[in-house]
Image 1 (cartoon, rainbow, N blue to C red):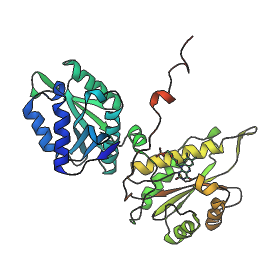
Image 2 (cartoon, protein in one colour):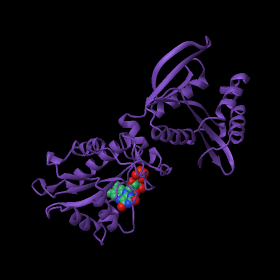
Image 3 (tube, rainbow, N blue to C red):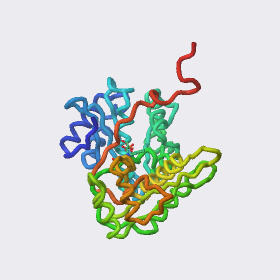
Length: 328
Ligand SMILES: Cc1cc2nc3c(=O)[nH]c(=O)nc-3n(C[C@H](O)[C@H](O)[C@H](O)COP(=O)(O)O)c2cc1C
């Protein structure tokens, strides 16, 4: 499991144990000691096998908008288990929530050492892109490749979106941000462009209070704003109605816009469309006409609590190339 590491002593112990076990990458004592020293003051995550840290990753701010993946290491017997990838996901989430726009990482340029070629491949597979090679930043035998990743790209935002069910800050959400979020919803594709999804943006505390009062069991009670998603069952052609697909695309677009703007949310649909039909109570509070159904609420606000990515099945369990099964 991954934990955010607290305390300088704990950080120094983990970096020392792991870096000293990886001489292929951290052979030079002076730079290894520098990593150990500097990591003690920076945000760090470790992957634990029982009580033992077997991998860690440390970030460092390098500018107002940019954070650097300063150093990472995973014990060799634990390579190829997705540990580095999971550590990176935790760090990327953190950097994104702190409002950084870019993350950079430096390594020895591809084609110089086999071990570093694997490091290059790892960073590329995480989504890093080549920024620049600086030949003499370290020394002439170790040309420095700088990789960069935008934390505000669609792909980056998709990777950092998770359902948030914690407390929200009471800060109101500017109406201009709520407009951007709702616009992302109406920009979504819809079957035959029937545009069957509408939204009601709720930021009036009195109306919000009325909605929160009917949410049973209570959810999103501290959210300073909400988007209520409405759908109309209009057929796209013949008897084909794509209303569910339409509002799903609109909701996902809005969730991504919410995260990109630095807020958090959760797709609350099951909760309000069960037998107790909370959705109908919300429709009545908002004066929604009969031909529309309320299908989902999206709270919007700044997160006060930490949250973690839920575990998802391995890529290869869900994605195949060209055929479902083995040939023959
Ligand atoms: C159609 C749909 C309905 C959902 N309804 C609820 C809900 O009522 N309550 C809730 O807490 N989460 C709800 N979720 C959120 C899922 O639980 C969540 O997406 C899933 O656990 C994966 O986690 P992630 O969003 O962090 O990737 C819903 C998601 C979808 C797509």
